Length: 350
Image 1 (tube, one colour):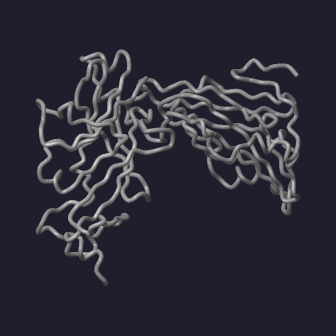
Image 2 (spheres, rainbow, N blue to C red):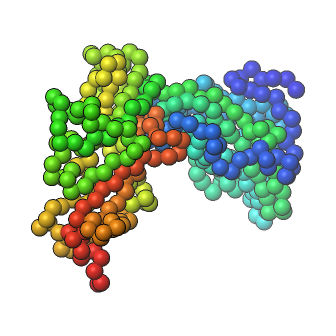
Image 3 (cartoon, rainbow, N blue to C red):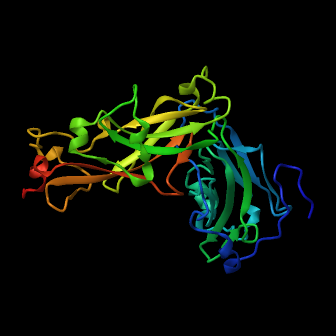
């Protein structure tokens, strides 16, 4: 078969039925995904996304391609030709009695689905997806078709899936790391002392002592991008957006907040997330909870001696969409605790 001239076009063999192709259609993100990006906007820091169309041509050529090179943050529309499946059929009223769903594994390892043909497309939804801003990598796409008569086919490049290269977003930092936690009484100049910083992989504890005595209680990390972080004249706040994504108690949705720029560290910039404003168990003696509506809505535990109420915070960071995590798909964690007596009402019988 001839090779088409469009970007990333590939000649494909006719895709057959059934189980022979199932092995090539993974239903979960790849285990080898490393740094990626969550689907969050960069508040104008990165270039505006581009609209790109992925076209999967008819069975006359079996070619596919992208209308322009893919970049992290792009809005992708998928145009899939129904002649690529033999499941196309009609039901009562001459309407489509078949449907095709598209799937994609994004560069960050997340999997998404979208309507691609027949009833799936007729019933609404957008035939496409957004590539998260930040790091680039591989984009894998495939399709699954069914009909009311039992037809079940995959269009998946004979089980290998269709792959596209995705470039990193503009202004995406080339490095993010050196995550530390600091809960200390002393300061050095206007910030923390180096001796008080410890690797964030060990977590942190924000407790009654920290509320009363700590002059610094924050989580820090650094980022580097040539021509930006090493340029003192650069408007960093306009070019690099740092965000934290956090929750308490180990379940529920994450809250997103900006992380403030703290200063330069050589050619890097340092960001600091202040723990005091997000303290989920605030209050000191005499400030106990007097209404059940003020009780924590997240999971808590008691210390072994029953004197303290505790909860965990799990979180990760992004800079222009590039993630900082302890490892792929994992989150950092820390512990907040306070006197259990302040929350006695929350554990008493109603």
